[in-house]
Amino acid sequence: MPSYKTKAVVLKTYKLGEADKIVKLFSPDHGIIDSISKGSRKIKSKFLGTLELYNFLELEISQGKNLDIITQASILKIFSNISKDFNKFLFCQLISDIVLKTHFKNDENNTQIFKLIYFCFNEIDKVNSFVEIEKCALFFISKFLKILGYLPNLNNCSLCKIQIGSADNTNAAKIANKDININKNIDLTPLINVNSVGNKFKSNFIYFSIKFGGFICNKCTFHLKQDYESKFLLNQEEFLLIKMLFKRDLNTLKEINFTDRSLNKLVRLLQDYLKYHLDINLNITPYIEGLKL
Ligand SMILES: [Zn+2]
Image (cartoon, rainbow, N blue to C red; front, side, top):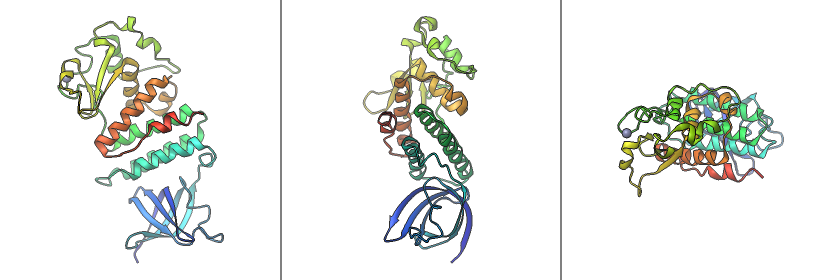
C-alpha cells in the first residue's frame, strides 16, 4: 500500500470495536483525512496519548480503501490547557466541526486553514476568560470565511455597490469606512451614542443580508423581502463590530468591549452566513449562551 508522511491536527475521534480508533485529521497537504489507528486504545499501544483531540502530529499513513491507516505518529504540539477546561474544549470542538463540515472545493487553502487552526487553538489554550475564548472562535470563523473567499461586503452595498456611508455621511459611516484605527482598551459606547451620530444614518440601523452577503444601503432595503431572505438589522455598535471582526487582528478584537447582546447577534449572523454560503449547519448559539455558568 502506498504511504505518505504529513503533519496534521486531530479534529475528531471515534472508538471502533475493542481497541481501534477512527481519527479525523486535517493536514496542510491533504486536507481532511479519514483514518484508522489499529489497536490504539490498548494500554501498550505506541499511540497511547498521541492521537488525542487537538494534538498536532507528524504522521506516517498508509492509503487504505475506505480509511487510511496511521502507522506512525509523533507529537509536534499538545495544548495541555484545552483538555482541562470545558469551555476551551467545546470551542475547539466548534472550530473542528466547522472544518469537518466544509466541502472544500480545492486544496490551495489547506495550508492557510491549518495555520489558522493552529493559531486559534494556541490562543484558546493561552487565554483565561470565557469572552476571550469566544472571541478566538469568532475570529476563527471570520478568517475561515475570508480564506475560502466568502468575505462579506463590508465597504459597499451588496446590491448597488455604493460605498456604505457615502450617502449617509455620518460619524458612524466615516468611522466604519476609514479602516478603523482605534486605540487600545477603547469602549465603543461613545461611538453609538445616538446624539453624537446624527440622524442621517437612517434610524441608526443598517441591514446585513445573508443572501446578498453583506450590508445593504438604505436605498436598497426595499429589495429585502421579509419572508424569505435572512437579514439582520444592525445598530451602530453591531455594524462596527462586524467590520472589526473581519478586518482586525485578534489582539485588537480582544481589547474591544462587546455587549452580550451584540455578541449574540453577531454569532447568529455568522451561523446563518455559514449555513447559507457554505452549507454548514451548526447551532452555535448554545456555545455562547449555555456555558457561562
Ligand atoms: Zn444599495
